[in-house]
Length: 495
Image (cartoon, rainbow, N blue to C red; front, side):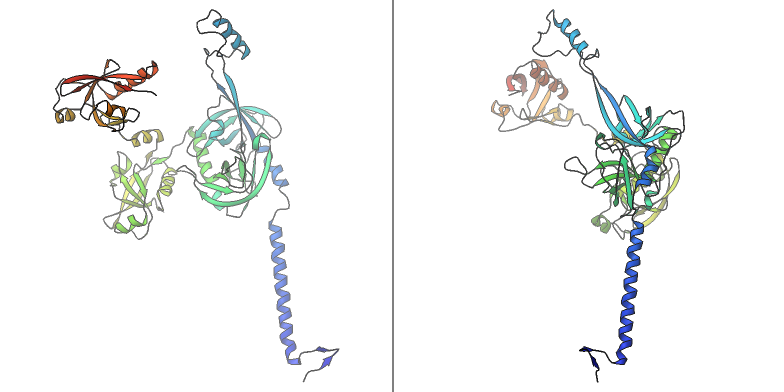
């Protein structure tokens, strides 16, 4: 039975408890939501002004000047003919007009940096100061000081500078970039587009980005980074440097919210070595390696996943001395599980030179542990070692002439039954649509002269081609021997 009052139906007494519980639950839920919103609001900074005031004195603008040499003998075209008695007069006039520097000009560039010690050590990007003849640092106070380069590292694009100051300088410290999470607030400061000290804020958009270097470990951020911000710091909300602003991804050269800062944990190690040694000393394992993909993992016994680095070559060095073999798969380095080539290279590079480490490899379906004493990585030496050996006797294509030539080796001489004393370059192939083919040049012919000069190698042949072109002639005369019989023919060398 229901009791009606003013046309409103009231629930029976036994339903009041359920309604009351529902309303209590709803009220509690609203309270929790309100508290969560308030907590979120408290996490969002109302302003970055206090942080900007704190960090600004430690951030610097960097101006570099480079002298570009001009040609002292360069004369404006059409003024005086070469060899004229007025030539020296006009040369002196042009020299005075250009400031007496023989036509040299000065080029300036802008960047950013930050002070890391009271005695004047400054961090910036290598590309900001590379090749500079003069470096000037401007502080937030307006003071300007000359800086000298202490050391640079092209692999991480980091440089350390030093200024001399009568008073201790305000400085900032490196934070732990590994604790930076995607979504954390960050603040960038620098000299964008030459506009002077500027602050922008954003979040960490991604971690562990790689651009082009083997030691890349970039923090991606949407804080506005533009040209001129290079070398400037990326701060967390504690005022610690978690990155060095280095690059942007942009179709138009301006900020579109994709900027990259080299992680501070990488930078701090580089800075420590540059300030101590003036150079970078990275560990060297001494192997050529490639990633383990799914197909390789499936074909090698003892691998249960596509991880590690397979050894493709073992040159003279630490690994060869330790017994690492071609075909081994490096899965653990000094207790660290290896994910891929990049991971191994970075881990080895961050390990102390001369340290003996355990390297676990998979070989013949089993894990083998070897002790390797790391050497010192020399990138220039390694680059030369990785260059393929030049085979001077390998055939070479001359596409403009439509022929392929080779040095006259003993094997070729024997194969063609040529006279022992015959010297020249042998025709290996002739393009059928070429002028050389139309004029009767054939495989097996030996070119003994080019441009009326004797040729005994491809290098000498190329010299004669260049000499012919430089002389203004359009054709080059060749003396060709076939079966002992000589004949001349002329080939077009330039159109």
